[in-house]
Amino acid sequence: MNSKHLHIISFDIPYPADYGGVIDVFYKLKALHASGVKIQLHCFEYGRVETPILETFCEKVYYYKRKMNKTQLFHSLPFVAVTRSSEILMENLLKDEYPILFEGLHCCYHLNDGRLSNRTKIVRMHNIEHDYYKNLEKVEKSFFKKNYFRREAEKLKSFETILNKANYIAAISAADAADLSTRYKNVHHITAFHPNEKIKIKEGMGKFCLYHGKLEVGENNEAALYLVNKVFSKIKTPLIIAGYKPSAELIADAAKYPNIQIKGNLSTVEIDKLISGAQINVLPTFQATGIKLKLLAALFNGRHCVVNSPMVANTGLEHLCSVKNSPEEMAEEIARLFETKFDMKEKQNRRLILSENFSNTANCKKILQLI
Image (cartoon, rainbow, N blue to C red; front, top):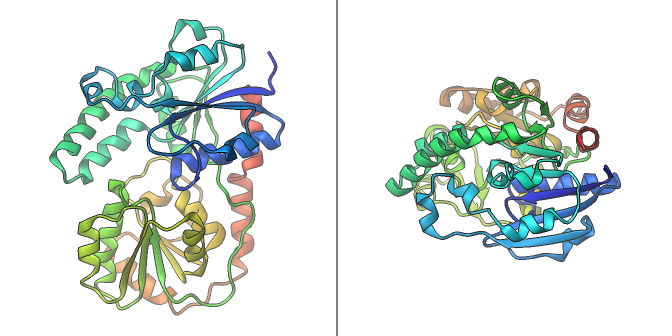
């Protein structure tokens, strides 16, 4: 088997690389391509447009329409998986004997197909999916969506056993690797691929704090509302909340406070500029799953970083952040750091930890060993 060829099945078109999952996929493509791997990329399409940019890193790119028919909600398998099934995809996979990388449980509908029994199959796990969906249920306000997330979590927990058909499981965080190892063999910790190759921290002081994320996602909306109502409502420090599709509730709550500004639907370049310009990147989360790529972006490119425990749990990044768990502690630390110059000696500490544990080159070598 030629180890320099690889099929990758992606849950979405991984460009633009502007949210967690696709960031990992896109920069994985770049790193593998740079290592000489000839990639055949298979993308499920549902809203994003086909792009020639992906052909720069891939030998061939295939697109398949995701089957978004609502009748699939009543299927016994998870909606996220059954809507990503395709016999045409199977025909394309069967044209050769190359290894296959499935990006998440979302793409595992065909993992146990007998026609792939002789293939090397790797599943990239971005989260413990049933836990992730349970947490989405907790923060969701819509009755329909809450019910969907609850049922999907149950289906994902049952569907996860399909991982027994994988030769290898590549977990994105140490905590997820430990959890999956209690149920499956051949679990490897391969951390997130990301766009940051060098530490780029600006000298001087910033004039605002920043929270950024894909705001239409329940956990990010919850974190942003927490900052608005529990933290920045109590202090005068300026806060910018930036991200895709801010909720009406978030916009209305932020409007009550003159020190809080919402910037919706910015480009990746504009977000990056805000990250590096901020005096403090404030990043709480109430979902201790996977690894948060927004945290890596803040540590590679931003000054001070204030988080809560779930954001850094089992990541090895705890010592690079100020970890505060109550709204009062967080507000106090923000007020202090807003007047404190970032110690540029800390850049070296970040460089050591991030280059050792979050290197795309090292991650790429781990994947090459599996295929």
